[in-house]
Amino acid sequence: MVSSDFYIQDNSNPEEKTLEAAKKLYQDGKYAEALKLYQGMLNASLSYKLYYEIGRCYYKMNDFLPSEEYFKKSLSLEGFKNPSYLYLGNIYYKRADIKNAIENWASAYAYKPDDAAVCLNLATSYFSKGMRFQAVFYYEKYLKYAKDKGNSYDAIKSSIDKCNEIGQEFLQKARRAIASKNNKSAIEYLTFAVKNMPVSFDINHLLGKIYLEENDYMHSLIYLKQAQCLDNHSLDVLQKLSSVYINLGDFTAAYCAMRRLLPLVLHNQPEYLKTIKLVKTLDESFDEYSYQGHKDWAMRYDSENNYHMALIEYENCVILKESLNDAFGERIERLKSFIKPEERIVKICLEKGGEFYNNGDFRTSNKYFSKVMLMSDKNSSEYKIAKSRVVDV
Image (cartoon, rainbow, N blue to C red):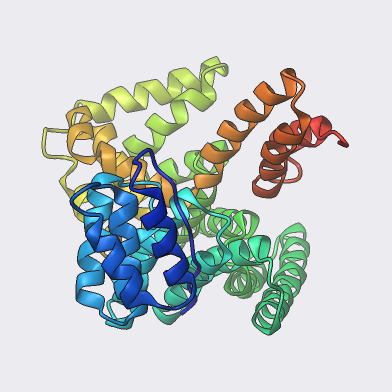
């Protein structure tokens, strides 16, 4: 297990001299003495920062029950940007409660995705559960954000690079087999490729597509759903998923896929009219309980820390019954933050960076634009905009 340290600020104002003294004691490893000072401040200031500091002292003293209590108190006051999640994840991990460890580390990742230690905690935990898709997803995040490139980094990078090399090699073999109209060989090559590169959209998409051509709908569904997890706005994936679900007789799932499809075919009138007709036909066959199967799957995936799949199923519930947004809306947003927190941060940093840039404060704007470049894809418009605005100062 890996851990990382934070120091946070909020708007509370405990006595500065006491606070600084407690900080100094903590940094010197005198956790019991620091704890006494922090506890003495409870009557004067109740803040998420103070609860966090008390929890951290108990944690360093290996007294995990009160540590957990204070971290949870901290979270009751600030439920998002709070490093208590990291330590709670560590506590649950020490108890071999991997489910709750992952949930808390995912919450830490949601507001600070460039914390390499959290990414590595998530990757190794998923790997221990045999969830290779999620493990590789976070290993790649770790490699992207790691600053300490020591032996662990080298070993992980070497393994991931080797898997990518093998995956690409077999993807090319599969494409040659497809060109020769040899779907059987293509499936064999792609199956080996996806084991090495489970978070490759192209491989999952292609494998699902070929299985569909072979009328093997169950296998097609597996890989098309994984492709959907990686790109929920792929027109071709949603079209093929609709077809798979209809052939499997899963009409509520087909309806949800087509509802997702509608905005993507809005400017293609024949496709839009065909899809809207199917949507209306299916809608008439449902009742107020048609969402129930999707709810069961959502909760099952959620309990397994399979947040990509859980998100899709919770969203399906809301598509089928809009009023369920009251019950599931908050969880949907939480799951989105577990999976792609960079999108939110990139948007905020572009806005903040732009403000400072327009005011001529290039030193500050550079910090925001550098964060955008770190978290966004190098081929994205966000990356290119940020790079174009970085100024030598």
